[in-house]
Amino acid sequence: MADNCSSVEIVEGCRLPVLRKNQEHEDEWPLAEILSLKEVSGRKLFYVHYIDFNKRLDEWVTADRLDMKKLQFPKKEAKTPTKNGLSGSRPSSPEREVPVVSEKKDTNNDTALQKKQRKTLDLNLQSATAPSRGKTLPTPKRKEVVPLVTPVPPATPVPALPSSTETSQAAVFPVVREPPTFKAREDLEPLPTVTTNGTARRLIPPQPGRKRKANCGGSDEMIKVLQYNKPQSAGVFLPPPEDSQDSSDGIPTAPRMTGSLVSDRSHDDIVTRMKNIECIELGRHRLKPWYFSPYPQELTTLPILYLCEFCLKYLKSLKCLQRHLTKCNLRHPPGNEIYRKGTISFFEIDGRKNKNYSQNLCLLAKCFLDHKTLYYDTDPFLFYVMTEYDSKGFHIVGYFSKEKESTEDYNVACILTLPPYQRRGYGKLLIEFSYELSKVEGKTGTPEKPLSDLGLLSYRSYWSQTILEILMDLKPDNGERPQITINEISEITSVKKEDVISTLQYLNLINYYKGQYILTLSEEIVDGHEKAMQKRHLRIDPKCLHFTPKDWSKRGKW
Image 1: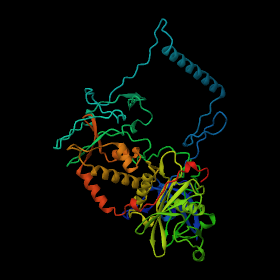
Image 2: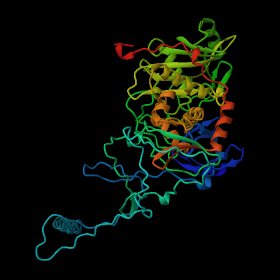
Image 3: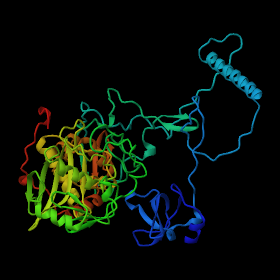
Image 4: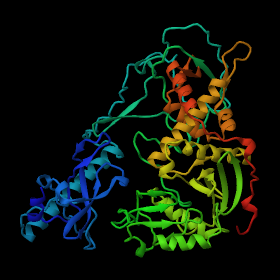
C-alpha cells in the first residue's frame, strides 16, 4: 500500500480506510479523513480523523497504514450563481456538462413557465377563496387523519404529567404479585396523525394551561413506589425534558450565549482540530493530550511540555522546571481549603484573584475537553480543585468550575478528572461535591450543556445511584406503599427536576397505572444498584465541608 502512495498524490480532505487496533487489539480498517500532512526524516506522515470516532483517537500515521485502493478525493465546491452573482452555499455535487441553449429559446421557456405559474396560482386562489361561478373548480381532497393504532374506548387515557393542582388520590396497590397489568402500546389511546408528503406524523395534543415545558409539570404529584420480584415490561415513556441531554441521538441542546462552553464553531478550523501537544509531564505523571489546547506556538514543537504540578506554570525543558521548583513556594492550589477528609481536599479558587493559576488550569483542561472555549476570561468563575495529599504536597486530581452568577441554575461549567485518576471514583466525587455545595446554597443545580461523552456517562450514573438510593430508603406509611413527588426528590438531592425526570425515563422506572404514576423497582435494578454502591468507596462527608456561600449579585465587581 505504501507503493501506491507514491504514485497517487494524497491531499487534505481525502478519505480512505486506515489500519488501527480496536479495544480487543484486533486490526480494523475504519474510514478516516486526512487533515494534514508532514514529512519527518524523509517519511511522509498523515494526520487522520476516524469518521464517527471521538477526536481524541486522531493520530499521525505512516503511509503503510493507508488503504489506497479505496481512496476518496474531496468533492469540489458546487458553483451555484445567485442573483447577485455570488456563489451559493448548496452542497457540493459532481460537475456535469450543461447543454447550451439559445437565448431566444430561454426567453420563450421563461415566458411559458411564468404563464404556467400564474395560471396555477389563479386556480389556487379561486378554489380557496372565490365563490363558485358557473363551473365548479375541483378542490383538492382533504387528507384524512388516520390513527396509527386501533382506537379503544376513552376510559383508559394516558395523560402526560399533570400540573401541580391535579394531585391524584388513587387507591393503594395490593402487595400480592399480579400478572403484568400494564397495557401494551397498541392498547393505549391513539394519538392523531397527519400525513405530509406521504409521511405520517404523530401529533401531540396541546395541554390546556401549559407553558413551553409541558413535561416538567406534575412534579408535585404523589408517585407510588412499588417493588416487584420480576422485572416489568417497558411502561409509558414521558417525553424527555428540554434541558436534558439524551445520548441516544447525541444531539446537544442549543448553545447558550454565556459561560465557558460557548462556541459558534467558527474556531473549529483545521488547526484546532489537530492535537498540538505531544506529551505533558505533570508531577510523576506523563499525560498524552486528547485535543487541541492554545498553548504558545513555540511550545507545541517540543516532545514534552513540562508543568509545575502546584502552580501549573508551563515550561519548555526539565532544567527550567527544576529551576522553577526552587522558586515556587506553592505546595497546594492557591485559594481556600474548604473540605478535607483523609487525603482528599478541595480548594476554592477565585478566577479574578488567582488569574494566572486559573488560566493555566483552563489550558491544561482544554487538552482533555473538546467543547471548552474559555481560557483567559476567568473573572466570572470559581474553580474547585480536588487534590490528593502526600508528604510532597497536594497533587491535583481533577476540578470543576462554576459561574459566580448563573441565570440558568448551572452548578458546573466544566468538570474534569485527569486521565491518571479516571475510573477510580473521583469523577462521581467531583459531581457529588458540586451538589453538596448546591445544598448549602439552598438551590437545585444542573451541569452546563453540552456534556462530553464521558461527562454524560458520569452524570447519568450519579443521578441514577442518587435517586435509587432515595427510593430504596423510603418506608411505608401506615401500611401503604411509600409515596414521593418529583419536587421532593429534587429538594433532597439538589438535582434539577428535569434531570430527575430524564433519569427516571432512562432507567425506565416510571409508569402510569390506574389513574396515577408508579415507580416499579425490579430485582434486576435493585441488585445492580446494590452492587454499584458496594464499589463506591469515595463519598463526600457533609460534616467535613466548611463553606459559606457568597451573594455575588450584591458585589459590583468580583
